[in-house]
Image 1 (cartoon, rainbow, N blue to C red):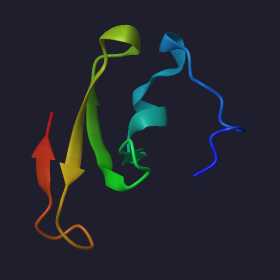
Image 2: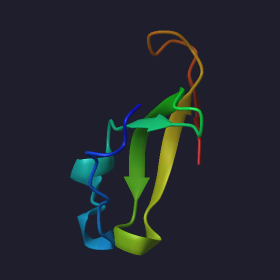
Image 3: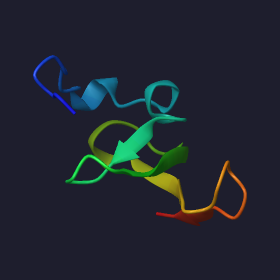
Image 4: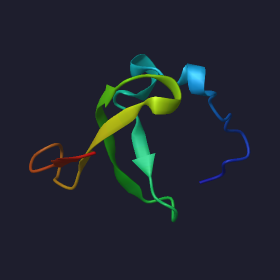
Length: 63
């Protein structure tokens, strides 16, 4: 994946509306999971990722 055109978000931009449903990628650009929901905002935001499974079936939530 070419990251040259991506813009890094500021802490203030890390909101539930932006993060929920976002795809999370690992260091080798493989899909790790997706953001299920968030706790908090900004620099202290925590996310719950759904990982594994197939088409949303059997996915496990991790924080």
